Length: 391
Image (tube, rainbow, N blue to C red):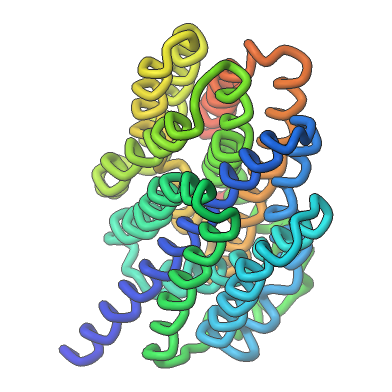
Protein backbone atom coordinates (compact mmCIF):
# COMPACT_ATOMS: atom_id res chain seq x y z
CA UNK A 1 0.00 0.00 0.00
CA UNK A 2 2.86 2.38 0.91
CA UNK A 3 4.56 1.60 -2.42
CA UNK A 4 1.34 2.25 -4.31
CA UNK A 5 0.76 5.54 -2.48
CA UNK A 6 4.36 6.61 -3.12
CA UNK A 7 3.98 5.74 -6.80
CA UNK A 8 0.75 7.72 -7.00
CA UNK A 9 2.39 10.75 -5.41
CA UNK A 10 5.35 10.49 -7.78
CA UNK A 11 2.99 10.31 -10.75
CA UNK A 12 0.96 13.28 -9.55
CA UNK A 13 4.00 15.53 -9.13
CA UNK A 14 5.48 14.50 -12.48
CA UNK A 15 2.18 15.43 -14.14
CA UNK A 16 2.18 18.74 -12.25
CA UNK A 17 5.71 19.55 -13.48
CA UNK A 18 4.74 18.71 -17.07
CA UNK A 19 1.79 21.09 -17.16
CA UNK A 20 3.77 23.82 -15.40
CA UNK A 21 6.35 23.79 -18.21
CA UNK A 22 3.52 23.72 -20.74
CA UNK A 23 2.06 26.79 -19.03
CA UNK A 24 5.47 28.45 -19.14
CA UNK A 25 5.74 27.91 -22.90
CA UNK A 26 2.28 29.31 -23.59
CA UNK A 27 2.76 32.21 -21.16
CA UNK A 28 5.99 33.17 -22.91
CA UNK A 29 4.89 32.61 -26.52
CA UNK A 30 1.78 34.78 -26.46
CA UNK A 31 3.36 38.10 -25.38
CA UNK A 32 6.67 37.30 -27.10
CA UNK A 33 5.24 36.81 -30.58
CA UNK A 34 2.72 39.63 -30.14
CA UNK A 35 5.51 42.05 -29.18
CA UNK A 36 7.71 40.89 -32.09
CA UNK A 37 4.88 41.34 -34.58
CA UNK A 38 3.90 44.72 -33.11
CA UNK A 39 7.47 45.97 -33.45
CA UNK A 40 7.49 44.67 -37.04
CA UNK A 41 4.36 46.70 -37.80
CA UNK A 42 1.87 43.80 -38.04
CA UNK A 43 -1.75 45.11 -37.57
CA UNK A 44 -3.41 44.32 -34.24
CA UNK A 45 -6.22 42.27 -35.80
CA UNK A 46 -3.75 40.08 -37.73
CA UNK A 47 -1.63 39.81 -34.60
CA UNK A 48 -4.63 38.54 -32.64
CA UNK A 49 -5.64 36.13 -35.40
CA UNK A 50 -2.13 34.66 -35.44
CA UNK A 51 -2.36 33.98 -31.70
CA UNK A 52 -5.42 31.80 -32.31
CA UNK A 53 -3.29 29.14 -34.04
CA UNK A 54 -2.58 27.58 -30.65
CA UNK A 55 -6.27 27.09 -29.94
CA UNK A 56 -7.33 26.15 -33.45
CA UNK A 57 -4.90 23.25 -33.13
CA UNK A 58 -6.60 22.24 -29.88
CA UNK A 59 -10.05 22.31 -31.46
CA UNK A 60 -8.94 20.41 -34.58
CA UNK A 61 -7.46 17.53 -32.60
CA UNK A 62 -10.11 17.33 -29.84
CA UNK A 63 -12.52 14.88 -31.53
CA UNK A 64 -9.64 12.45 -32.04
CA UNK A 65 -8.10 12.48 -28.56
CA UNK A 66 -10.20 9.87 -26.77
CA UNK A 67 -9.44 6.99 -29.16
CA UNK A 68 -5.61 6.94 -28.74
CA UNK A 69 -5.97 7.45 -25.00
CA UNK A 70 -8.31 4.45 -24.82
CA UNK A 71 -6.06 2.30 -27.00
CA UNK A 72 -2.55 3.22 -25.86
CA UNK A 73 -3.01 4.77 -22.39
CA UNK A 74 -1.90 8.03 -20.80
CA UNK A 75 1.88 7.81 -21.13
CA UNK A 76 2.18 7.47 -24.94
CA UNK A 77 -0.24 10.38 -25.45
CA UNK A 78 1.81 12.61 -23.13
CA UNK A 79 5.07 11.58 -24.82
CA UNK A 80 3.68 12.28 -28.30
CA UNK A 81 2.31 15.67 -27.25
CA UNK A 82 5.60 16.72 -25.65
CA UNK A 83 7.61 15.72 -28.72
CA UNK A 84 5.39 17.83 -30.98
CA UNK A 85 5.82 20.86 -28.70
CA UNK A 86 9.63 20.52 -28.50
CA UNK A 87 10.08 20.24 -32.29
CA UNK A 88 7.74 23.18 -32.90
CA UNK A 89 9.52 25.45 -30.39
CA UNK A 90 12.90 24.71 -31.96
CA UNK A 91 11.49 25.55 -35.39
CA UNK A 92 10.53 29.17 -34.61
CA UNK A 93 14.05 30.65 -35.08
CA UNK A 94 14.43 28.94 -38.47
CA UNK A 95 12.16 31.33 -40.40
CA UNK A 96 10.18 34.39 -39.30
CA UNK A 97 6.90 34.42 -41.20
CA UNK A 98 3.35 35.15 -40.04
CA UNK A 99 2.01 32.04 -41.81
CA UNK A 100 4.88 29.76 -40.73
CA UNK A 101 4.61 30.87 -37.09
CA UNK A 102 0.84 30.40 -37.25
CA UNK A 103 1.37 26.77 -38.34
CA UNK A 104 3.90 26.22 -35.56
CA UNK A 105 1.45 27.61 -33.01
CA UNK A 106 -1.18 25.27 -34.40
CA UNK A 107 1.12 22.26 -33.84
CA UNK A 108 1.94 23.49 -30.33
CA UNK A 109 -1.81 23.65 -29.68
CA UNK A 110 -2.12 20.01 -30.75
CA UNK A 111 0.79 18.93 -28.57
CA UNK A 112 -0.28 20.95 -25.54
CA UNK A 113 -3.82 19.63 -25.76
CA UNK A 114 -2.52 16.06 -25.76
CA UNK A 115 -0.47 16.87 -22.65
CA UNK A 116 -3.29 18.59 -20.80
CA UNK A 117 -6.04 16.15 -21.74
CA UNK A 118 -4.03 13.09 -20.72
CA UNK A 119 -2.66 14.56 -17.47
CA UNK A 120 -5.98 16.11 -16.46
CA UNK A 121 -7.96 12.91 -17.11
CA UNK A 122 -5.33 10.83 -15.30
CA UNK A 123 -5.65 13.04 -12.21
CA UNK A 124 -9.45 13.42 -12.14
CA UNK A 125 -9.92 9.68 -12.70
CA UNK A 126 -7.71 8.65 -9.76
CA UNK A 127 -8.07 11.35 -7.07
CA UNK A 128 -10.71 10.73 -4.33
CA UNK A 129 -13.71 13.13 -4.61
CA UNK A 130 -13.10 14.64 -1.17
CA UNK A 131 -9.62 15.78 -2.26
CA UNK A 132 -10.49 16.71 -5.85
CA UNK A 133 -10.69 20.47 -5.30
CA UNK A 134 -7.27 20.55 -3.62
CA UNK A 135 -5.61 18.33 -6.23
CA UNK A 136 -7.06 20.15 -9.22
CA UNK A 137 -6.15 23.49 -7.63
CA UNK A 138 -2.53 22.32 -7.37
CA UNK A 139 -2.76 21.28 -11.03
CA UNK A 140 -4.11 24.72 -11.92
CA UNK A 141 -1.50 26.35 -9.68
CA UNK A 142 1.30 24.68 -11.63
CA UNK A 143 -0.09 26.03 -14.89
CA UNK A 144 -0.44 29.47 -13.32
CA UNK A 145 3.15 29.44 -12.08
CA UNK A 146 4.28 28.59 -15.59
CA UNK A 147 2.23 31.43 -17.07
CA UNK A 148 3.56 33.86 -14.46
CA UNK A 149 7.19 33.02 -15.17
CA UNK A 150 6.85 32.75 -18.96
CA UNK A 151 6.45 36.47 -19.82
CA UNK A 152 9.53 37.28 -17.72
CA UNK A 153 11.67 35.58 -20.37
CA UNK A 154 10.36 37.83 -23.16
CA UNK A 155 13.21 40.40 -22.70
CA UNK A 156 15.65 37.64 -23.77
CA UNK A 157 14.60 38.61 -27.28
CA UNK A 158 16.90 41.63 -26.98
CA UNK A 159 19.90 39.26 -26.77
CA UNK A 160 18.85 37.02 -29.66
CA UNK A 161 15.36 36.78 -31.13
CA UNK A 162 15.39 32.99 -31.11
CA UNK A 163 16.76 32.61 -27.56
CA UNK A 164 13.37 32.54 -25.71
CA UNK A 165 12.14 29.77 -28.02
CA UNK A 166 15.28 27.69 -27.43
CA UNK A 167 15.09 28.13 -23.64
CA UNK A 168 11.45 27.06 -23.65
CA UNK A 169 12.25 24.00 -25.79
CA UNK A 170 15.03 22.91 -23.41
CA UNK A 171 12.79 23.24 -20.35
CA UNK A 172 10.05 21.26 -22.09
CA UNK A 173 12.60 18.57 -22.96
CA UNK A 174 13.62 18.26 -19.27
CA UNK A 175 9.99 17.87 -18.14
CA UNK A 176 9.26 15.49 -21.02
CA UNK A 177 12.06 13.19 -19.86
CA UNK A 178 10.30 12.70 -16.50
CA UNK A 179 7.36 11.01 -18.25
CA UNK A 180 9.54 7.98 -18.93
CA UNK A 181 9.74 7.34 -15.16
CA UNK A 182 5.99 6.67 -15.02
CA UNK A 183 4.24 3.36 -15.46
CA UNK A 184 1.65 3.50 -18.22
CA UNK A 185 -2.01 3.17 -17.28
CA UNK A 186 -5.19 2.70 -19.26
CA UNK A 187 -8.32 4.71 -18.44
CA UNK A 188 -10.64 1.96 -17.26
CA UNK A 189 -13.66 4.23 -17.30
CA UNK A 190 -13.37 4.63 -21.07
CA UNK A 191 -13.66 0.91 -21.63
CA UNK A 192 -17.17 0.69 -20.19
CA UNK A 193 -20.10 0.03 -22.48
CA UNK A 194 -21.75 3.23 -21.31
CA UNK A 195 -18.90 5.30 -22.73
CA UNK A 196 -18.55 3.37 -25.97
CA UNK A 197 -21.24 5.30 -27.83
CA UNK A 198 -20.82 7.92 -30.53
CA UNK A 199 -18.58 10.88 -29.63
CA UNK A 200 -21.35 13.35 -30.41
CA UNK A 201 -23.76 11.59 -28.06
CA UNK A 202 -21.21 11.63 -25.23
CA UNK A 203 -20.59 15.33 -25.80
CA UNK A 204 -24.31 16.11 -25.77
CA UNK A 205 -24.89 14.12 -22.58
CA UNK A 206 -21.95 15.80 -20.85
CA UNK A 207 -22.96 19.33 -21.88
CA UNK A 208 -26.51 18.73 -20.60
CA UNK A 209 -25.35 17.92 -17.08
CA UNK A 210 -22.21 20.06 -16.81
CA UNK A 211 -22.56 23.09 -19.10
CA UNK A 212 -22.40 25.51 -16.19
CA UNK A 213 -19.01 24.08 -15.13
CA UNK A 214 -17.61 24.71 -18.63
CA UNK A 215 -18.04 28.48 -18.23
CA UNK A 216 -15.00 28.58 -15.91
CA UNK A 217 -12.52 27.16 -18.47
CA UNK A 218 -14.04 29.43 -21.15
CA UNK A 219 -13.58 32.54 -18.99
CA UNK A 220 -10.02 31.64 -18.01
CA UNK A 221 -9.08 30.90 -21.61
CA UNK A 222 -10.47 34.25 -22.73
CA UNK A 223 -8.62 36.16 -20.02
CA UNK A 224 -5.34 34.30 -20.36
CA UNK A 225 -5.03 34.49 -24.13
CA UNK A 226 -6.15 38.08 -24.58
CA UNK A 227 -4.08 39.39 -21.68
CA UNK A 228 -0.97 37.59 -22.89
CA UNK A 229 -1.44 38.13 -26.62
CA UNK A 230 -3.14 41.53 -26.93
CA UNK A 231 -2.37 43.45 -23.75
CA UNK A 232 1.27 43.96 -24.88
CA UNK A 233 -0.11 45.65 -28.00
CA UNK A 234 -2.44 47.83 -25.89
CA UNK A 235 0.38 48.70 -23.51
CA UNK A 236 2.95 49.54 -26.20
CA UNK A 237 0.44 51.77 -27.97
CA UNK A 238 -0.16 53.60 -24.70
CA UNK A 239 3.52 54.26 -24.05
CA UNK A 240 4.38 51.43 -21.65
CA UNK A 241 7.77 49.75 -22.06
CA UNK A 242 8.16 46.06 -22.90
CA UNK A 243 9.92 45.51 -19.56
CA UNK A 244 6.90 47.00 -17.73
CA UNK A 245 4.57 44.75 -19.72
CA UNK A 246 6.63 41.73 -18.63
CA UNK A 247 5.83 42.70 -15.02
CA UNK A 248 2.15 43.63 -15.41
CA UNK A 249 1.05 40.44 -17.18
CA UNK A 250 2.51 38.06 -14.54
CA UNK A 251 0.67 40.06 -11.85
CA UNK A 252 -2.56 38.33 -12.93
CA UNK A 253 -0.91 34.91 -12.76
CA UNK A 254 0.68 35.63 -9.37
CA UNK A 255 -2.72 36.59 -7.99
CA UNK A 256 -4.00 33.21 -9.11
CA UNK A 257 -1.00 31.47 -7.57
CA UNK A 258 -1.79 32.94 -4.14
CA UNK A 259 -5.49 32.03 -4.21
CA UNK A 260 -5.50 28.81 -6.25
CA UNK A 261 -5.14 26.23 -3.47
CA UNK A 262 -7.15 28.15 -0.80
CA UNK A 263 -10.07 28.51 -3.23
CA UNK A 264 -9.78 24.85 -4.21
CA UNK A 265 -9.93 23.78 -0.56
CA UNK A 266 -12.80 26.21 0.06
CA UNK A 267 -14.71 24.66 -2.86
CA UNK A 268 -14.29 21.23 -1.21
CA UNK A 269 -15.99 22.65 1.89
CA UNK A 270 -18.77 24.96 0.60
CA UNK A 271 -19.22 23.78 -2.99
CA UNK A 272 -17.85 24.76 -6.41
CA UNK A 273 -20.67 27.07 -7.54
CA UNK A 274 -20.43 29.62 -4.69
CA UNK A 275 -16.66 29.86 -5.19
CA UNK A 276 -17.13 30.25 -8.96
CA UNK A 277 -19.53 33.12 -8.31
CA UNK A 278 -16.97 34.77 -6.00
CA UNK A 279 -14.31 34.41 -8.70
CA UNK A 280 -16.44 35.81 -11.51
CA UNK A 281 -17.83 38.68 -9.42
CA UNK A 282 -14.45 39.67 -8.05
CA UNK A 283 -12.89 39.48 -11.50
CA UNK A 284 -15.60 41.74 -12.91
CA UNK A 285 -14.89 44.42 -10.29
CA UNK A 286 -11.11 44.15 -10.65
CA UNK A 287 -10.98 44.50 -14.45
CA UNK A 288 -13.55 47.27 -14.45
CA UNK A 289 -11.32 49.04 -11.93
CA UNK A 290 -8.30 48.52 -14.20
CA UNK A 291 -10.23 50.18 -17.04
CA UNK A 292 -11.08 53.20 -14.85
CA UNK A 293 -7.44 53.53 -13.72
CA UNK A 294 -5.84 52.79 -17.10
CA UNK A 295 -3.69 55.95 -17.05
CA UNK A 296 -1.49 54.42 -14.32
CA UNK A 297 0.69 51.37 -15.04
CA UNK A 298 0.98 50.66 -11.30
CA UNK A 299 -2.80 50.78 -10.86
CA UNK A 300 -3.28 48.38 -13.79
CA UNK A 301 -0.74 45.99 -12.26
CA UNK A 302 -2.53 46.08 -8.89
CA UNK A 303 -5.93 45.50 -10.50
CA UNK A 304 -4.52 42.63 -12.57
CA UNK A 305 -3.15 41.10 -9.36
CA UNK A 306 -6.56 41.42 -7.65
CA UNK A 307 -8.24 40.04 -10.78
CA UNK A 308 -5.90 37.06 -10.64
CA UNK A 309 -6.77 36.40 -7.00
CA UNK A 310 -10.44 36.06 -7.93
CA UNK A 311 -10.32 34.76 -11.52
CA UNK A 312 -7.04 32.85 -11.67
CA UNK A 313 -8.73 29.68 -10.38
CA UNK A 314 -11.64 29.62 -12.84
CA UNK A 315 -10.18 26.81 -14.94
CA UNK A 316 -9.39 24.45 -12.05
CA UNK A 317 -12.69 25.25 -10.31
CA UNK A 318 -14.53 24.51 -13.55
CA UNK A 319 -12.75 21.16 -13.95
CA UNK A 320 -13.55 20.18 -10.36
CA UNK A 321 -17.18 21.28 -10.78
CA UNK A 322 -17.42 19.29 -14.01
CA UNK A 323 -16.11 16.22 -12.16
CA UNK A 324 -18.82 16.70 -9.50
CA UNK A 325 -21.63 16.99 -12.06
CA UNK A 326 -20.52 14.41 -14.64
CA UNK A 327 -21.21 10.66 -14.34
CA UNK A 328 -18.03 8.56 -14.09
CA UNK A 329 -18.37 7.06 -17.56
CA UNK A 330 -18.49 10.56 -19.10
CA UNK A 331 -15.54 11.96 -17.13
CA UNK A 332 -13.00 11.71 -20.02
CA UNK A 333 -15.45 13.51 -22.30
CA UNK A 334 -15.96 16.15 -19.62
CA UNK A 335 -12.21 16.74 -19.38
CA UNK A 336 -12.04 16.98 -23.15
CA UNK A 337 -14.86 19.54 -23.16
CA UNK A 338 -13.07 21.62 -20.51
CA UNK A 339 -10.15 21.83 -22.92
CA UNK A 340 -12.45 22.65 -25.83
CA UNK A 341 -14.25 25.44 -23.96
CA UNK A 342 -10.91 26.76 -22.77
CA UNK A 343 -9.87 26.87 -26.43
CA UNK A 344 -13.12 28.59 -27.45
CA UNK A 345 -12.39 31.27 -24.89
CA UNK A 346 -8.76 31.45 -25.97
CA UNK A 347 -9.80 31.86 -29.60
CA UNK A 348 -12.36 34.52 -28.80
CA UNK A 349 -10.03 36.53 -26.55
CA UNK A 350 -7.32 37.60 -29.06
CA UNK A 351 -9.78 38.07 -31.94
CA UNK A 352 -12.23 40.20 -29.96
CA UNK A 353 -9.42 41.95 -28.13
CA UNK A 354 -7.66 42.77 -31.42
CA UNK A 355 -10.92 44.09 -32.87
CA UNK A 356 -11.56 46.32 -29.85
CA UNK A 357 -8.00 47.64 -30.06
CA UNK A 358 -8.51 48.63 -33.69
CA UNK A 359 -11.95 50.21 -33.13
CA UNK A 360 -11.51 51.87 -29.73
CA UNK A 361 -8.43 50.85 -27.77
CA UNK A 362 -9.53 52.85 -24.71
CA UNK A 363 -12.34 50.32 -24.16
CA UNK A 364 -10.04 47.29 -24.27
CA UNK A 365 -9.92 46.63 -20.50
CA UNK A 366 -13.70 47.07 -20.15
CA UNK A 367 -14.03 43.95 -22.30
CA UNK A 368 -12.89 41.73 -19.42
CA UNK A 369 -15.25 43.28 -16.88
CA UNK A 370 -18.15 42.76 -19.30
CA UNK A 371 -17.22 39.12 -19.85
CA UNK A 372 -16.92 38.35 -16.13
CA UNK A 373 -20.24 40.07 -15.40
CA UNK A 374 -22.06 38.13 -18.15
CA UNK A 375 -20.73 34.76 -16.98
CA UNK A 376 -21.53 35.67 -13.35
CA UNK A 377 -25.20 36.14 -14.32
CA UNK A 378 -25.25 32.88 -16.33
CA UNK A 379 -23.77 30.96 -13.39
CA UNK A 380 -26.21 32.57 -10.98
CA UNK A 381 -29.20 31.79 -13.22
CA UNK A 382 -28.08 28.29 -14.12
CA UNK A 383 -28.33 26.59 -10.72
CA UNK A 384 -31.93 25.36 -10.87
CA UNK A 385 -31.62 24.32 -14.50
CA UNK A 386 -28.58 22.16 -13.79
CA UNK A 387 -30.25 20.46 -10.83
CA UNK A 388 -33.33 19.63 -12.91
CA UNK A 389 -31.21 18.18 -15.73
CA UNK A 390 -29.22 16.00 -13.36
CA UNK A 391 -32.41 14.60 -11.93
